[in-house]
Length: 132
Image (cartoon, rainbow, N blue to C red; front, top):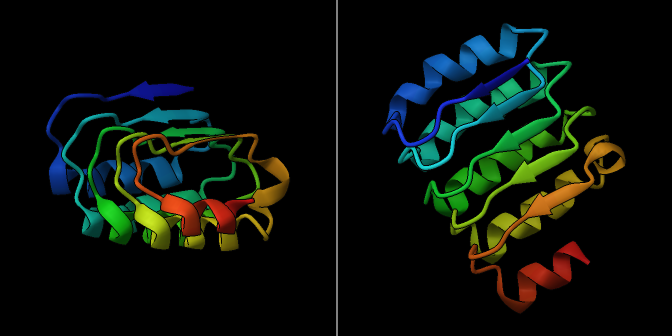
């Protein structure tokens, strides 16, 4: 039900893990903290988010994937109605990532998401306004 793969320097290798997570119907919690995940690798995670019907918690903290990754995850989140907790601490998604997350939360995910951690993401006033 839970998979914790933190501090393993997965980088782009997270794509294979994301593909498996997309298919694993019993996976409720996925933690990928501090794995040097790049923005481009977040596309695979977004696909997993969009297709996994059970995932409730996703922790991507301490992966500086920036706005590219934040926007990718937001696109996957838009099609997800089960995620209750998303942790992006120290991912540097900036205002543009926060704005995309805000748009995603207006869809199905807005009803289920209860916890969004964006500390040290440098979202600024524009990002904060978009999320409020």
